[in-house]
Length: 471
Image 1 (cartoon, rainbow, N blue to C red):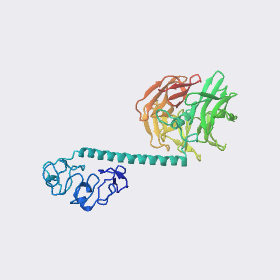
Image 2: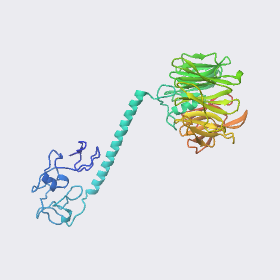
Image 3: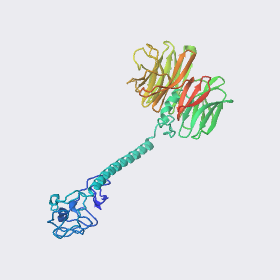
């Protein structure tokens, strides 16, 4: 065996590339070989610094293979007159040794029969060393990533860790969490279960389903249930009790059912991390909408702000900011306001398109971006946009768009209204994130869509909760 000087790894006799570290092996007089050392004379006499068959020695010693020291005779035989190496060339990989056995000294010189195989072996060793190096690097990066996740924790909107429920498009349900919450959808998920709102003859059910689609009812209400959310071991939602909206909750095992609020009559509920946002509209004062936030760990409630003459449609907390999409009763168009999530103060008006030629209808967040649809007043058609969380780098993604954006895998799903006022239908469509491949998925009228594991959960025209496979 040959010991690599770079990493001290033993290698096969004729190695030129170390099979472990990929370093070039150039045999020297002090290189260890089969338990013996070569001598300087042998280094000059035999190719690569040592003869074959594990025997060593300098001139005029004889190699065990049967040939003698120089001068050699011309022809296909080696050695002095009468001293022949069985009619064969040297078995060293490249065919012939160095002086005085130079190739020019033999009329029958050809490359050794072993040379092609040796070249192939050397090439394979190089690739093996490269793949081994890459493999070690990947393992090292994986270990570092695991340590980082354990040390710092991986943020998930429900505050409990990374997801294990995977969808076939994007691989992680955390991307659709924001869309589902922003759309007041009737579905949410965690590591083990899918939680959804379903309808029955006895009312509306909060249920959970496992990977085998086995369902368990956690709670039942006679009045309408919407805006399903989750934080840690509790589900939160809005349920109509006695004709009034209440924020309710239940543990994911079906115990400890609570009415969290009875007096405020909230419209919508959105939970991001430990923050529960809910809206309250005062229709007696020209549509004033107020936004509140409850810390689910401490129970503290704070006011985020009031928007006059408006109806808040969507609230998204993302990248340290709170985004509010609302409908202005005065100018009849939609706008976006933003404030800091940690220390809410005055609202900042975002004008993503610029000027007054905009009507923002819906927003969501994914991929480090805010997605929204705009209806330019100049042509009255939905268009799909994205922007950075600070409102910069506004880009048009597609000339078509709609309501209730859901970013899922490689696509942005949306509902395109058809018609006006109360006599409209919706068409579920999807478009690639780069704006290509716009495609119709369904023409069924629906609202509040949510997607988990290639299944669309939505509320139908008559208020019932339904599902539909996307593939």
